[in-house]
Amino acid sequence: MNSIRELLATTRVLPGDAAADAPLLLAHILGKDRSWLYAWPEYRLAPEQLEHYQTLLQRRLLGEPLAYLTGHKEFWSLQLHVTPDTLIPRPETELLVETALGLPVETTLAQVLDLGTGSGAIALALASERPRWQLTATDISNNALDLATQNAARHDIHNICFVCSHWFLDLDADLCWHIILSNPPYVAEDDPHLQEDGLPHEPISALTAGADGLRDLRRIIHTAPGFLHPGGWLLVEHGMDQGTAVRQLFRLAGFRCIETRQDLERRDRITLGCYSPDHGHE
Ligand code: GLN
Image 1 (cartoon, rainbow, N blue to C red):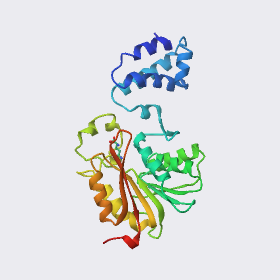
Image 2 (cartoon, rainbow, N blue to C red):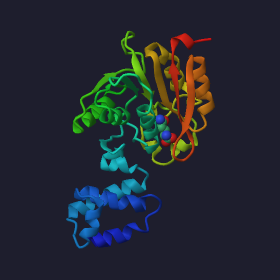
Image 3 (cartoon, helix red, strand yellow):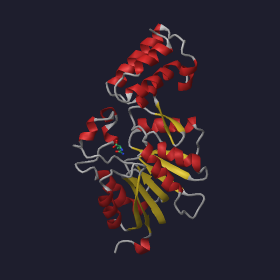
Image 4 (cartoon, rainbow, N blue to C red):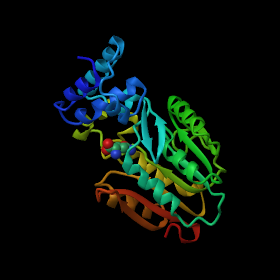
């Protein structure tokens, strides 16, 4: 039983997402796209191809996310390499990109900082849309920075400077940006969701932030004003139940025009605010 037709027939009875992911794994090991499978149903896999497919399918059935098995994930129409060193880019994070692109920045040469870039998804999406923006993308993990740098090279993107830094800690204190944005870890350490949906396979440092999930958001929001040009914007992604707390952190840090936006599933997902020293701490 090693023709594509026979193998596809067996995938239909697989549980959960594995039924939809199995054809993608099959296409991946053959180096083809999914439509190729349906065009060549009589193609017979060589024994080593079959073994490779069965190994990957087994790992998928045990909960490993598809993106780690194929090594890539699409974000904002860019095909990105991903490894277990970084979070897998999520579609809801595209809201952060979309919102940043819509901000009323006065210069076409905006300086933009992406904190905790991981695979580089946010910075790469912005850089590809705005070739004249100057982006800085940080991460605490050198493995993540290597991956993000490779992703930039793959897409021929040259307007991003990658820097190893723990949030703002290792950045030159004199630097300023027009837009700072981040998808930091924001899941509470005891959140049962961490045991589901492939999350046990993702780096815990990219997911959790203290008992309430707000540890890193607090640091970022508190410190950002010192690194923003007057009138600059901060945008952060957060959990669906953190909107009120995050808006309060923005207020305490002296931001104005504070707003929370919802993702396509109508869950609070990002908060943004503008920092202007004149209207700062009151
Ligand atoms: N949205 C992710 C999840 O709940 C978490 C991403 C993050 O912590 N930045 O699966």
